[in-house]
Length: 339
Image (cartoon, rainbow, N blue to C red; front, side, top):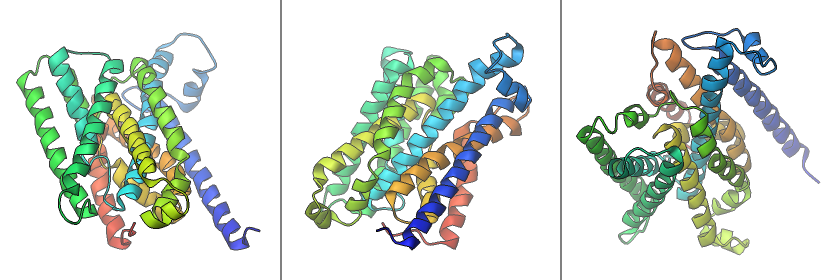
Protein backbone atom coordinates (compact mmCIF):
# COMPACT_ATOMS: atom_id res chain seq x y z
CA UNK A 1 0.00 0.00 0.00
CA UNK A 2 1.34 3.44 -0.97
CA UNK A 3 1.82 5.72 2.06
CA UNK A 4 -0.52 8.75 2.10
CA UNK A 5 2.44 11.14 2.28
CA UNK A 6 3.93 9.63 -0.88
CA UNK A 7 0.60 9.89 -2.69
CA UNK A 8 0.29 13.52 -1.63
CA UNK A 9 3.79 14.33 -2.94
CA UNK A 10 3.02 12.61 -6.24
CA UNK A 11 -0.24 14.54 -6.55
CA UNK A 12 1.56 17.84 -5.96
CA UNK A 13 4.25 16.97 -8.49
CA UNK A 14 1.63 15.97 -11.06
CA UNK A 15 -0.32 19.17 -10.44
CA UNK A 16 2.72 21.40 -10.84
CA UNK A 17 3.76 19.48 -13.96
CA UNK A 18 0.29 20.01 -15.42
CA UNK A 19 0.51 23.73 -14.65
CA UNK A 20 3.97 23.90 -16.26
CA UNK A 21 2.59 22.15 -19.34
CA UNK A 22 -0.17 24.75 -19.52
CA UNK A 23 2.46 27.49 -19.35
CA UNK A 24 4.34 25.79 -22.19
CA UNK A 25 1.19 25.77 -24.32
CA UNK A 26 0.73 29.49 -23.62
CA UNK A 27 4.33 30.22 -24.63
CA UNK A 28 3.83 28.22 -27.83
CA UNK A 29 0.78 30.36 -28.64
CA UNK A 30 2.77 33.53 -27.97
CA UNK A 31 5.54 32.23 -30.22
CA UNK A 32 3.00 31.92 -33.03
CA UNK A 33 1.60 35.41 -32.53
CA UNK A 34 4.54 37.66 -31.59
CA UNK A 35 7.33 38.91 -33.79
CA UNK A 36 8.01 41.48 -36.48
CA UNK A 37 4.40 40.92 -37.61
CA UNK A 38 2.05 40.50 -34.65
CA UNK A 39 -1.01 38.29 -35.07
CA UNK A 40 -3.99 38.23 -32.73
CA UNK A 41 -4.20 34.97 -30.71
CA UNK A 42 -7.66 34.07 -31.99
CA UNK A 43 -6.54 34.79 -35.54
CA UNK A 44 -3.54 32.50 -35.02
CA UNK A 45 -5.82 29.68 -33.86
CA UNK A 46 -8.21 30.28 -36.75
CA UNK A 47 -5.37 29.71 -39.21
CA UNK A 48 -5.37 26.01 -38.31
CA UNK A 49 -9.09 25.58 -38.98
CA UNK A 50 -9.60 27.92 -41.93
CA UNK A 51 -7.69 26.97 -45.12
CA UNK A 52 -8.25 30.41 -46.67
CA UNK A 53 -4.87 31.83 -47.81
CA UNK A 54 -3.71 35.02 -46.14
CA UNK A 55 -0.52 36.79 -45.15
CA UNK A 56 -1.03 35.83 -41.50
CA UNK A 57 -1.64 32.21 -42.45
CA UNK A 58 1.58 32.09 -44.46
CA UNK A 59 3.63 33.59 -41.63
CA UNK A 60 2.22 31.21 -39.03
CA UNK A 61 2.06 27.98 -41.01
CA UNK A 62 5.30 28.22 -42.94
CA UNK A 63 7.54 30.20 -40.59
CA UNK A 64 6.46 30.36 -36.97
CA UNK A 65 4.91 26.90 -36.57
CA UNK A 66 8.03 24.92 -37.57
CA UNK A 67 10.20 27.34 -35.59
CA UNK A 68 8.05 26.81 -32.50
CA UNK A 69 8.07 23.02 -32.88
CA UNK A 70 11.85 22.98 -33.35
CA UNK A 71 12.27 25.11 -30.22
CA UNK A 72 10.12 22.67 -28.24
CA UNK A 73 11.99 19.61 -29.49
CA UNK A 74 15.47 21.10 -29.07
CA UNK A 75 14.69 22.50 -25.62
CA UNK A 76 13.39 19.14 -24.41
CA UNK A 77 16.36 17.29 -25.91
CA UNK A 78 18.97 19.55 -24.32
CA UNK A 79 17.28 19.61 -20.90
CA UNK A 80 16.71 15.84 -20.75
CA UNK A 81 20.24 15.08 -21.96
CA UNK A 82 21.59 17.42 -19.26
CA UNK A 83 19.65 15.57 -16.56
CA UNK A 84 20.99 12.23 -17.81
CA UNK A 85 24.58 13.51 -17.89
CA UNK A 86 24.33 14.91 -14.37
CA UNK A 87 23.20 11.51 -13.15
CA UNK A 88 25.83 9.54 -15.06
CA UNK A 89 28.71 11.81 -14.05
CA UNK A 90 27.32 12.37 -10.53
CA UNK A 91 28.31 15.95 -11.17
CA UNK A 92 25.86 18.86 -10.72
CA UNK A 93 27.79 20.85 -13.35
CA UNK A 94 27.54 18.17 -16.03
CA UNK A 95 25.96 19.31 -19.26
CA UNK A 96 26.36 18.67 -22.97
CA UNK A 97 27.93 22.11 -23.26
CA UNK A 98 30.34 21.62 -20.37
CA UNK A 99 31.30 18.14 -21.60
CA UNK A 100 32.02 19.47 -25.09
CA UNK A 101 29.32 17.35 -26.75
CA UNK A 102 27.54 20.30 -28.35
CA UNK A 103 30.84 21.84 -29.42
CA UNK A 104 31.97 18.53 -30.91
CA UNK A 105 28.74 18.15 -32.87
CA UNK A 106 29.04 21.72 -34.13
CA UNK A 107 32.67 21.24 -35.14
CA UNK A 108 31.81 18.07 -37.05
CA UNK A 109 29.04 19.87 -38.97
CA UNK A 110 31.32 22.79 -39.86
CA UNK A 111 34.17 20.47 -40.92
CA UNK A 112 31.77 18.49 -43.13
CA UNK A 113 30.49 21.71 -44.73
CA UNK A 114 34.07 22.92 -45.26
CA UNK A 115 35.15 19.64 -46.89
CA UNK A 116 32.03 18.55 -48.78
CA UNK A 117 30.27 21.87 -49.23
CA UNK A 118 26.81 22.87 -48.06
CA UNK A 119 24.51 19.93 -47.43
CA UNK A 120 20.94 19.44 -46.18
CA UNK A 121 20.25 18.81 -42.52
CA UNK A 122 19.67 15.13 -43.35
CA UNK A 123 23.38 14.90 -44.13
CA UNK A 124 24.73 17.19 -41.45
CA UNK A 125 22.81 15.46 -38.67
CA UNK A 126 24.90 12.31 -39.14
CA UNK A 127 28.10 14.32 -38.82
CA UNK A 128 26.61 15.92 -35.71
CA UNK A 129 26.03 12.46 -34.24
CA UNK A 130 29.60 11.50 -35.09
CA UNK A 131 31.00 14.63 -33.47
CA UNK A 132 28.85 14.24 -30.36
CA UNK A 133 29.85 10.60 -29.92
CA UNK A 134 33.54 11.26 -30.56
CA UNK A 135 33.75 14.08 -28.03
CA UNK A 136 31.90 12.02 -25.42
CA UNK A 137 34.47 9.24 -25.78
CA UNK A 138 37.36 11.72 -25.84
CA UNK A 139 36.25 13.44 -22.64
CA UNK A 140 36.03 10.16 -20.76
CA UNK A 141 39.33 8.84 -22.11
CA UNK A 142 41.13 12.03 -21.08
CA UNK A 143 39.46 12.13 -17.67
CA UNK A 144 40.19 8.45 -17.00
CA UNK A 145 43.96 8.97 -17.23
CA UNK A 146 45.55 8.77 -13.80
CA UNK A 147 45.13 6.86 -10.57
CA UNK A 148 41.73 8.18 -9.53
CA UNK A 149 40.03 7.60 -12.86
CA UNK A 150 37.27 9.76 -14.31
CA UNK A 151 36.36 11.87 -11.30
CA UNK A 152 33.69 14.59 -11.64
CA UNK A 153 36.31 17.36 -11.52
CA UNK A 154 38.49 15.70 -14.17
CA UNK A 155 35.45 15.14 -16.39
CA UNK A 156 34.54 18.82 -16.17
CA UNK A 157 38.11 19.92 -16.91
CA UNK A 158 38.40 17.52 -19.85
CA UNK A 159 35.09 18.81 -21.18
CA UNK A 160 36.25 22.42 -20.96
CA UNK A 161 39.41 21.53 -22.89
CA UNK A 162 37.49 19.69 -25.61
CA UNK A 163 34.99 22.56 -25.84
CA UNK A 164 37.81 25.08 -26.32
CA UNK A 165 39.48 22.90 -28.96
CA UNK A 166 36.29 22.28 -30.94
CA UNK A 167 35.27 25.93 -30.66
CA UNK A 168 38.63 27.02 -32.02
CA UNK A 169 38.35 24.62 -34.97
CA UNK A 170 34.83 25.82 -35.72
CA UNK A 171 35.76 29.51 -35.58
CA UNK A 172 38.89 29.02 -37.66
CA UNK A 173 37.02 27.25 -40.46
CA UNK A 174 34.18 29.76 -40.52
CA UNK A 175 36.67 32.64 -40.72
CA UNK A 176 38.81 30.86 -43.31
CA UNK A 177 36.00 30.65 -45.86
CA UNK A 178 33.34 33.18 -44.83
CA UNK A 179 31.52 33.09 -48.20
CA UNK A 180 31.06 29.33 -48.30
CA UNK A 181 30.13 29.10 -44.63
CA UNK A 182 28.05 32.29 -44.35
CA UNK A 183 24.95 30.23 -43.56
CA UNK A 184 26.70 28.76 -40.51
CA UNK A 185 27.50 32.11 -38.89
CA UNK A 186 24.16 32.55 -37.15
CA UNK A 187 23.84 28.80 -36.66
CA UNK A 188 27.16 28.80 -34.80
CA UNK A 189 25.77 30.90 -31.93
CA UNK A 190 22.50 28.96 -31.71
CA UNK A 191 19.65 30.38 -33.75
CA UNK A 192 16.09 29.39 -34.64
CA UNK A 193 15.72 31.95 -37.42
CA UNK A 194 15.32 30.35 -40.86
CA UNK A 195 14.50 26.94 -39.41
CA UNK A 196 11.44 25.77 -41.30
CA UNK A 197 9.72 22.48 -42.13
CA UNK A 198 12.61 20.92 -44.12
CA UNK A 199 14.78 21.13 -40.99
CA UNK A 200 11.95 19.98 -38.72
CA UNK A 201 11.16 16.89 -40.78
CA UNK A 202 14.81 15.83 -40.83
CA UNK A 203 15.51 16.07 -37.10
CA UNK A 204 12.06 15.27 -35.68
CA UNK A 205 12.42 11.44 -35.86
CA UNK A 206 15.69 11.53 -33.92
CA UNK A 207 14.34 13.97 -31.33
CA UNK A 208 11.07 12.07 -30.81
CA UNK A 209 12.66 8.62 -30.56
CA UNK A 210 15.48 9.89 -28.36
CA UNK A 211 13.10 11.69 -26.00
CA UNK A 212 10.67 8.77 -25.72
CA UNK A 213 13.49 6.36 -24.87
CA UNK A 214 15.11 8.84 -22.49
CA UNK A 215 11.90 9.42 -20.55
CA UNK A 216 11.77 5.66 -19.92
CA UNK A 217 15.19 5.63 -18.21
CA UNK A 218 14.16 7.25 -14.92
CA UNK A 219 14.21 3.98 -12.96
CA UNK A 220 17.68 3.06 -14.27
CA UNK A 221 19.01 6.51 -13.42
CA UNK A 222 17.59 6.21 -9.91
CA UNK A 223 19.38 2.89 -9.45
CA UNK A 224 22.66 4.17 -10.89
CA UNK A 225 22.52 7.13 -8.52
CA UNK A 226 22.74 4.65 -5.63
CA UNK A 227 26.25 3.67 -6.69
CA UNK A 228 27.81 1.07 -8.98
CA UNK A 229 27.89 -1.82 -6.50
CA UNK A 230 24.34 -1.38 -5.25
CA UNK A 231 23.02 -0.94 -8.79
CA UNK A 232 24.68 -4.19 -9.85
CA UNK A 233 23.25 -5.91 -6.80
CA UNK A 234 19.79 -4.79 -7.90
CA UNK A 235 20.27 -6.35 -11.32
CA UNK A 236 21.44 -3.40 -13.42
CA UNK A 237 24.09 -4.13 -16.03
CA UNK A 238 25.84 -0.86 -15.33
CA UNK A 239 28.26 -0.92 -18.26
CA UNK A 240 25.56 -1.55 -20.84
CA UNK A 241 23.23 0.93 -19.14
CA UNK A 242 25.81 3.72 -19.20
CA UNK A 243 26.71 3.01 -22.83
CA UNK A 244 23.06 3.12 -23.85
CA UNK A 245 22.44 6.33 -21.93
CA UNK A 246 25.46 8.03 -23.47
CA UNK A 247 24.22 6.92 -26.90
CA UNK A 248 20.86 8.58 -26.16
CA UNK A 249 22.65 11.77 -25.12
CA UNK A 250 24.65 11.74 -28.36
CA UNK A 251 21.46 11.31 -30.43
CA UNK A 252 19.62 14.10 -28.61
CA UNK A 253 22.52 16.56 -28.67
CA UNK A 254 23.48 15.70 -32.24
CA UNK A 255 19.95 16.28 -33.54
CA UNK A 256 19.53 19.47 -31.49
CA UNK A 257 22.85 20.89 -32.67
CA UNK A 258 22.18 20.00 -36.31
CA UNK A 259 18.82 21.78 -36.08
CA UNK A 260 19.82 25.13 -34.64
CA UNK A 261 23.47 25.10 -33.61
CA UNK A 262 25.23 24.66 -30.26
CA UNK A 263 23.02 26.07 -27.51
CA UNK A 264 24.51 25.83 -24.04
CA UNK A 265 23.13 26.27 -20.56
CA UNK A 266 19.69 24.67 -21.11
CA UNK A 267 20.93 21.27 -19.99
CA UNK A 268 22.81 22.78 -17.06
CA UNK A 269 20.12 24.90 -15.44
CA UNK A 270 16.82 23.19 -16.25
CA UNK A 271 17.52 19.88 -14.42
CA UNK A 272 18.41 21.84 -11.27
CA UNK A 273 15.19 23.80 -11.51
CA UNK A 274 13.31 20.51 -11.94
CA UNK A 275 15.15 18.98 -8.98
CA UNK A 276 14.12 21.88 -6.75
CA UNK A 277 10.49 20.93 -7.43
CA UNK A 278 10.64 17.15 -7.56
CA UNK A 279 13.51 16.06 -5.35
CA UNK A 280 15.99 13.37 -6.45
CA UNK A 281 13.56 11.07 -8.32
CA UNK A 282 14.74 11.02 -11.93
CA UNK A 283 11.39 9.82 -13.21
CA UNK A 284 10.00 13.21 -12.28
CA UNK A 285 13.19 15.15 -13.09
CA UNK A 286 13.12 13.89 -16.68
CA UNK A 287 9.42 14.69 -17.06
CA UNK A 288 9.86 18.21 -15.71
CA UNK A 289 12.98 18.77 -17.82
CA UNK A 290 11.02 17.81 -20.94
CA UNK A 291 8.56 20.63 -20.15
CA UNK A 292 10.80 23.32 -18.63
CA UNK A 293 13.47 23.04 -21.34
CA UNK A 294 11.07 23.92 -24.18
CA UNK A 295 9.57 26.69 -22.03
CA UNK A 296 13.03 28.24 -21.62
CA UNK A 297 13.75 27.96 -25.35
CA UNK A 298 10.42 29.50 -26.37
CA UNK A 299 10.69 32.29 -23.81
CA UNK A 300 14.21 33.17 -24.95
CA UNK A 301 13.18 33.05 -28.60
CA UNK A 302 10.22 35.37 -28.00
CA UNK A 303 12.44 37.84 -26.13
CA UNK A 304 15.02 37.73 -28.91
CA UNK A 305 12.37 38.60 -31.49
CA UNK A 306 10.92 41.52 -29.53
CA UNK A 307 14.02 43.20 -28.06
CA UNK A 308 15.65 44.18 -31.36
CA UNK A 309 13.28 46.16 -33.64
CA UNK A 310 13.57 45.08 -37.25
CA UNK A 311 15.72 42.07 -36.39
CA UNK A 312 16.28 39.43 -33.76
CA UNK A 313 18.83 38.23 -31.25
CA UNK A 314 19.77 34.54 -31.59
CA UNK A 315 18.16 32.35 -28.97
CA UNK A 316 21.56 31.05 -27.84
CA UNK A 317 22.66 34.57 -26.95
CA UNK A 318 19.44 35.32 -25.05
CA UNK A 319 19.68 32.10 -23.05
CA UNK A 320 23.27 32.91 -22.13
CA UNK A 321 22.35 36.42 -20.96
CA UNK A 322 19.30 35.30 -18.97
CA UNK A 323 20.61 31.97 -17.80
CA UNK A 324 23.91 33.00 -16.24
CA UNK A 325 22.46 35.24 -13.50
CA UNK A 326 19.57 32.84 -12.95
CA UNK A 327 21.98 29.99 -12.33
CA UNK A 328 24.07 32.14 -9.99
CA UNK A 329 20.92 32.87 -7.97
CA UNK A 330 20.07 29.18 -7.96
CA UNK A 331 23.48 28.35 -6.51
CA UNK A 332 23.37 31.34 -4.13
CA UNK A 333 20.08 30.53 -2.47
CA UNK A 334 20.22 26.77 -2.55
CA UNK A 335 23.32 24.61 -2.62
CA UNK A 336 23.61 22.27 -5.57
CA UNK A 337 22.49 18.79 -4.74
CA UNK A 338 25.33 16.31 -4.42
CA UNK A 339 24.61 13.66 -7.04
